[in-house]
Image 1 (cartoon, helix red, strand yellow):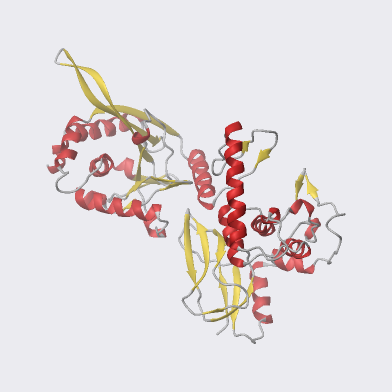
Image 2 (cartoon, one colour):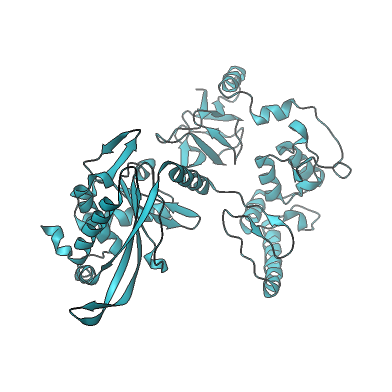
Amino acid sequence: MSCIEVMPKLGLTMTEGTLVNWHKSEGEKIEKGEILFEVETDKLTNEIEAKEGGVLRKVLVEEGETVKCLVPVAVIADENEDISELLKQAGSQNGESEKEEEEKQPKVQTPAKTAEPVKVGGRIKISPVARKLARQSGANYELITGTGPMGRIVKKDVEGYIENNRIKVSPAAAKLAKELNVDLVGIKKDGRIMKKDVLEASEVAKMTAAVSEEKAEEKVLPQQTVKEVNRGEKEVKMSGMRKVIAKRMSQSVSVSPTVTYNMSMDTSELKRLKNSFKDIFKVTYTDLLIKIVSQVLKEFPLANCSVEGDTFILKNYVNMGVAVALEDGLLVPVIKDCDIKGLKQITTEFKELAKKARENQLGPDDLTGGTFTITNLGMFGIDTFSPIINQPEVAILGVNKIVETPVVENGEIVIKPLMSLSLTADHRAIDGAYAARFLQRVKQYVEKPGLLIL
């Protein structure tokens, strides 16, 4: 049965997704329920199954492209079935795709060696798909003539350049070259480039890099534009996760008038309680704070609400979001109904969610529904910071490092393990005095955690 595959809507807040990988190519057979493509959105990569079985007759969205939800991305049909009506239907839902526009442009067969690539503001115009293909194949797109709209370099231009320059490479070698970041053009070989050729080129590149590092060290950080040792700049495109973080944090700052309040507290008893559990199950300071803050939020409902216009939406439950740091960003999985769960259950669930986050296995439900967030930078040695509220919540608690500090107790100087907590609050809902009382109550539980059983 024929069908049009679309960009799925995987959650209530999802508006668009980036198609990062096709598991099938045009002309390949696919079974219903088999993985067809992968989508990156809301900091997650999701595998999307085919709705129907058949042949992948037409790919409408290339890898790396971002499109709105429910926009057609492919057509599946029988091998000899007429799909003209399906293509027309897909076009009417999304307008003409970039690929269709490219195919309608006059085919210009200007030799690459004599043509100048079209530049705008000093930049060469090239589609994301064409740029990706050029990088994977090692083709220098500065030498390629664009035949797309306004002289833009498109996928077929790169494919033509590769063919004209006789870059012959096996699929396995191309994949390995991408993984090892090997320039295929630099491999001089008359015949087809194989895996062993890529491995040899990689070893040569490593030796060259080792010599260069002795002269100047340079580390390119993810999602940043950095200055090189010599002149020029390097552009590193944001990942889907980083784009979502940037968008949400900007929205939060523009929506919420915030104030950050800091308070130090003695963790002597909390440490003693933590150590008392070690023969039963492993518990962390974050686990204990989740339990404590969940209890305090029931006493301070304005810290556990959201704001809609001129109305406070008070929650009679606590869904605790806990920030988990990843290599290229962070996720905030949510532990549901923390206020009615025991410490052991909270510890187990948080450990499982953190593991899923690091393995990219979280689902949309794991990341939604939070009413308050905790973010812990204490293990990184941070003394104090101002965390940004995770909308639509009205407060977030930052956890800082524990410092052995001299304090005066009963007229004597003693050393206490003090920890500072940083509460960022939306002033529309939480005034200074309310925030101070909230932190004072948290402090009572931290310094006398036995109160949790009352």
